[in-house]
Each structure stands twice: as C-alpha cells, then as structure tokens.
Image (cartoon, rainbow, N blue to C red; front, side):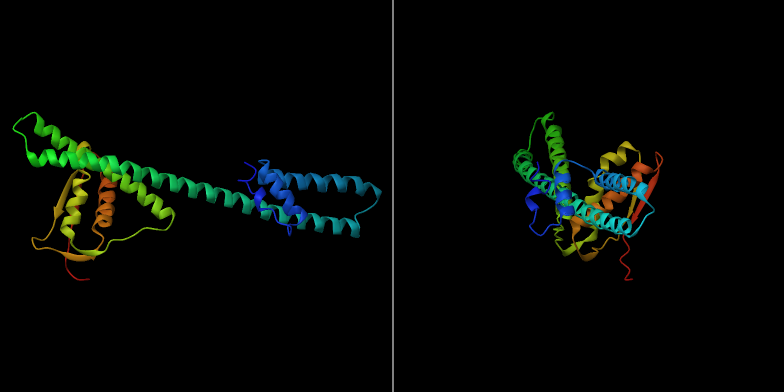
Length: 238
C-alpha cells in the first residue's frame, strides 16, 4: 500500500518537506492533516518565543521558512495523490475494457447460433417468437458492451471513428431500432421525415446512431407521457 501511495517515488533530491509529504501520503494523511501539522508547529514555536519579547527578525524568518516548507509539502502531497488516482483510474479502465472483450466472445457465439436457427426457419409457431426474442435480446446485450468499450477508449483518448460513405437514413433507422422499447414504455411517438432518395454522407454511422439514439432516449425520458418527437433529415446543403 505504501508503495502504491508513492514511497517508491522518493528521490535523493527531495527536500525534508517533500519527504515529509511522501510519508504522510503513505500513512493516509489528507492534505488538511498536513496543513494542520504545520499550523500546530508554527503555533507551538511562536507561543514559546513571543513571551520573551515582541516579534523580531527571527520570528519573521521562521514564518517565512514555515511557509516555504508548507508550500513544498502541500505541492508534493497533491502531486502524489493525483498520480495515485490517475493510476487507479487507468487500472479501472483496463479492467473494464478486458471484461467487455471477454463478454463479447460468448455473446457473439450465442448470436451466431441464434442466426443459424433463424436461417433454418421453424414450422413450430411457438418456437419462431422465441428465436425473435433471442435475436433482439442478444443485440441489446451487445450494445452495452460497445458502450463500455467506448467509455474505456474515451478515458484513454483512443476513440476510433470508422468514417465511410453511408446513407444517413440507415443511421436514423438504427437509432430508432435501438430505442423502440423505451419509446413504447413511455408511449412516446417519434415522427421521422426522410427523403425517399439516399442521403449519402461521410460519417461514422454507428456514432451518428448513438448520438441520435441518446437524444431520442433523453426526449422520451424527460418528456411527458404520450409526447412526440420529430426527426428530420434535410439534405439541403448548408
């Protein structure tokens, strides 16, 4: 624990105040505790010296020295704590990314198996709806995993945009398909006005669908029941 809180980062060039900060961080002392120690030291020394006479040059030099030590200790303490939490966040992001990758494999296998069942068809009227449910639910399971990976990538500044020529109408349909359940639950109507001809744009369709889906999702959550939202695609050049 002491190593993770910075004891391993001690340097021979550290001042005494910086060494003090390293030890205090390792012992779990907060910044307020460190400042309090210096205040107590200042108060103790001044209370023992002032009765001997009015404040003089030595007291001034002492105060200046305490201020310098306090500044060095506080700066080192803050830097160590910030680095500790940066490392913790990095480890958390790595774990989230690893888990999402691990979960994608079994979900991918399930989706493939369901697609095979769907392709084979079924004469059993009771089985076909079950296959449809499995297709929808595995698709729903895959989306949060993509979102989790996106969060990890954003934290590490590794978001990759897959730009290509796509029909924006497809992006809109994808966004609507992913939010049909919450729209139905809220009795929230969405009116979609799209041209009959393809609207080609150089974009990342997945990201566009995510952004639009989030907007529609928020509209459904925050609007009164039975409210309506309109989505338009206007191909007119701006």
